[in-house]
Image 1: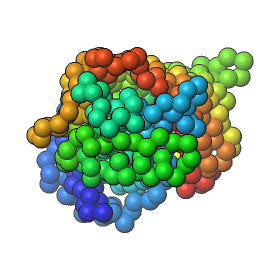
Image 2: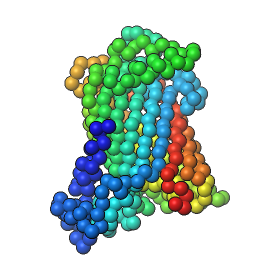
Image 3: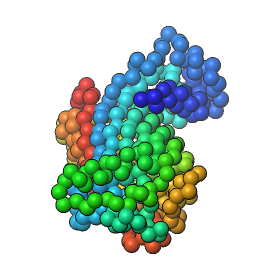
Image 4: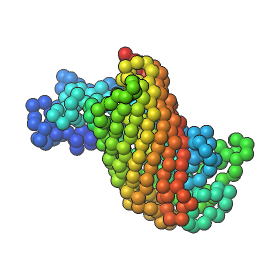
Length: 364
């Protein structure tokens, strides 16, 4: 758990780079590190002891089993699983003004996320011990994700730093073979001898999401959430755009459904999910990625490994259903993605299930 020591430095970095004002200083003025120190050590002090758990989530994605409807495949992006903890930082007013300058942010909320996730990628036919060099390379990705978020009624910023490993040390081969050997009727994966080499993985993600005003038709609420962002690191370099449309009963006061390959809203909890103890909505997300680098297709950064010619533009579509009762929530979705590399036999789809529990009880 040595990665936890990066949390304070990450928070401080975000404070110094994003802050523009404190108290009577105008939003256009620059803020130096001494102002942050003064804010932290003032009579209204803040420390790591003020952090409070907000909620806990678990994710599972798969392209050929329970979460997915309609087919039974086992190829390309074949499995994803992880756990995520949302934290209420309970910042002081001085720090809040540093992180979200008045005039730019109105009554802001803040959240911190800590996640551990694993992804598994294989070739088209897992029983082939020597897949074609034009096939999707085998690889795994095991990583810790540390995120900071700020939001008001109209917009939401997500900053994330992922630290992990690609290759054999991700334990992807071990996990897939264990699952296939545990459940009857499963093929034995045999192409892992050609997986990517071990490589330290460092990636940064930023995404800004906006929220439209809610509309209402026959008692159902509707809203739109457009988003833009980018990834930067040796795992992925890309620009991305999304728009989510959702409608239902008692829409939550958050910035969209949680996604395993994306993120969840750490600034909100179940007590803010609508006016009642029950909430349910359906959603559809459409997106496009402009990809400059994908280690799972382009191969290792420094070592020699298999690779394929990746596509520069990807289309992504998802439909899903999210429900909440009191402090428990459950989500399900189906996603489709266009071809990622030359020679790929069509696009790919996968299913997602996630569930969670908010530690902030309704009205609490």
